[in-house]
Length: 617
Image (tube, rainbow, N blue to C red; front, side):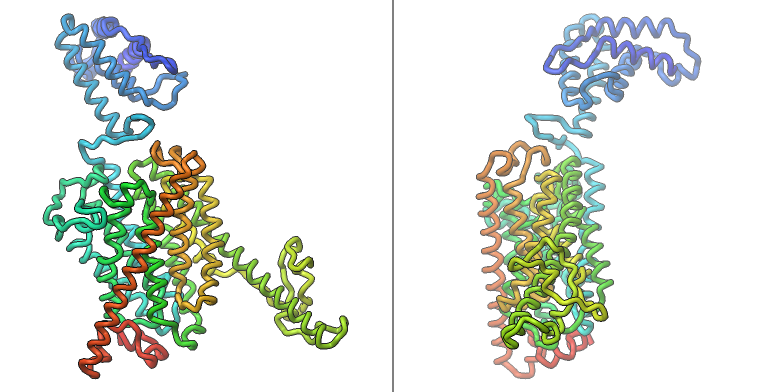
């Protein structure tokens, strides 16, 4: 039986060969294939077991070589891919139609076999249509559905426990429980709100700014339904996946007001913010009919919807709520280990965060590679920038102290003994980097017994990794892997510099929400307009400046500006509304002041003692 199958495979390859590059003619003789299949069968002596395997009809024998030919590529073929296989099979059907009067029944069954193989081929590996890979939308894709289920689990794990551990380890010990509680409660709150009305307002067509309410409570969503944005998976899976984005977006904001906000007002703010800010931005960027979506603004996995929205909201909230008390600012982090574990969970989940947003498995592979590269480069970039900045600042202080000492004594000798302690440190700063014409290493006096240097920071490394992951999010599936190095390098260095700028501006963004997510999202969106490539995405219409489409940079600027503007205005409106309600409740009764569920800022005594006890006992 095996030998007979092999002989028929050779017959099929002999008469049905792959065309040469650029040629559309097929060297195929259907009558010869049919005749040789019949002769080979008549000359074969079959055992009873072989007869059970292959059967006794000519139709099965004729279909076997063709199916084997489709599954096994011809040896020595110059084309490793098979973009024209569906065309060859359709051309085969056309030629077979001319012979129906000779072999009517055999040809009919063979045509059905070829049509089934064509449908299977198109559904599994896709077909090329004008350079864009399309999918068979007639039925759900099992592999995509399973992949989506895994993405849902991992993206949820980014919030609980990932973000909860990351934020909980960075705050002081007396507010750890409150910080973790906020992340977990937001996961519960937004899950309910998303199913009730959030999904319907985000992913149904009604207007360019917001959707309708026909899918509220999922009343019009059936298990067999498919959303037109992702027709390869059930709509219930698509709804759950997008809900995980809504959860983590709202949870990110809590890092900006850590150490000084009450529990119930935070929950009320998050519920209102989700409807007022997140839902319109999500609909405008990701839903057909949204005004940014229709203008071809590129946002692969949430640069505008997630990071810019959360970062700008954190900036406004931290400004309106006010600074922390000076004693709480200087408190050390509760547990670096918790933060590292949380950042590790975020990194792992981010691969699903970006990879699950792809429309094809090929684009998902590109998103995974660029995400990993950018996150790794971002961690190194932040750490090196922090070290270089610290050493430069140290060298500047040493130089200033030397000048002051020389001016006071009026002489050049014996200056080291009068210099401050930090000026007598030994620096491992590279000698090629110079400040004021002198090497930095010569600006400090060696002190062997007490050597104090600027060392790489663990917190800086994990912050840089998150910044690198943030900046690649808008273009993870649109840019090539080599450009991910540029994304990560700029994400780590630029976000670090903006994290230092908050001290100059006097805005107490506790955990650098705006510097990491806001600036990272803005910069990533603009860079996507520069480096977007159809080679990476497989979409001809997706191209950036380097591919000859500088107009995409302007479109990205419009998308970033609109998202920033609405996030700032919407957050300000919600904060002012809560402040007004808080003022009204305070006027009604002083006894309700402690239970004012609209007053975000805790009392000073509770802030100093720690809001864990004040809010959660």
